[in-house]
Amino acid sequence: MLERFTPHRSDWILALLYVHNRKPIKGTVRIMKELFLFKERVKLDKKVKIGEFYTFIPYDYGPCSFQVYHDLDVLKKRGDVVALERPDKHYEVYLLTEGGEYRAYRFLKSHHSSVMKTLDQVKKEVNDLPLYGLLSYVYEKYPKYAKKSVFAPF
Image (cartoon, rainbow, N blue to C red):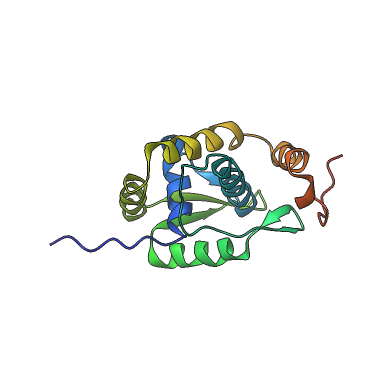
C-alpha cells in the first residue's frame, strides 16, 4: 500500500535540489536566493499556483526566510537531504538522498509542468554564479531586499 503524500513547504527545497539534473547546491544562502527568485518569477504568472511557500524579508544577505533554515534541518534529520561539510569553504554542499529524490519527484508531479520548468530555469541560470554575482543579481533586480544587507556589491 502506498503511503499518502501530504505536501509541505519544505518539499520546495527538495524540488529545487531535484531539478537541473539534481545538481548540488553550495550553501544555504544560495538555496535561499534560488527559492526567492523562483517565487518572484512564479508570481508573474497568475495561472500558476504553488501553494504553501516561504515568506521572505530583507536581511543580512538580501531576501531571507528563517523557515528555510528550519526546514533544511528537518530534511537533514529526516534523511532526505545530506549536507557535506567543506573544510576549505564556509558553506555546506546540499544534495538529495534516494528518499529525498523520491519525495521531490512525487511533489513535482503534483504541480503543473510549467512550475518544474520555472524552478529548473532559475537553478540553471544562477546556481553556478559566484556568490558575489548571485547577490549582485538579486540586489539589482529586487533592491528593496538589499536595504538591510551587510554585503554591498555596488
